[in-house]
Length: 108
Image (cartoon, rainbow, N blue to C red):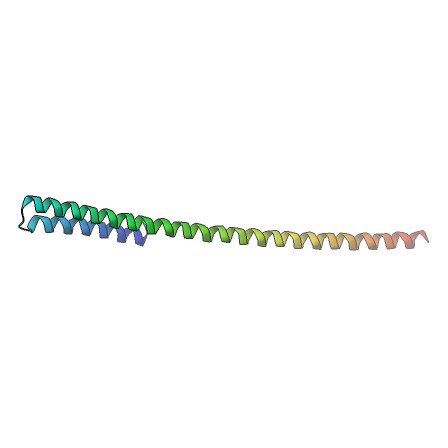
């Protein structure tokens, strides 16, 4: 479990315990207590939705960075392969030219 998950769980737990203690020890009418419970639940829901939205956006940003790195790596590999091809073709051409020169000299 990473640190942000631990912080989120701790925050949620603290919010729930704090809300429960506040309701239990507050001298108020039942209807007011029910309204406060409903408001606390709505606030907690909103906070969770905001946190989930933030985490989802962080995931999308991470995914975009990974896709960019993948593309960069792919381009680097293609460049290296092309360089090797050029080197091999150049060496093959050079060898063929040498062989033709030797062949011409042998026929003289």
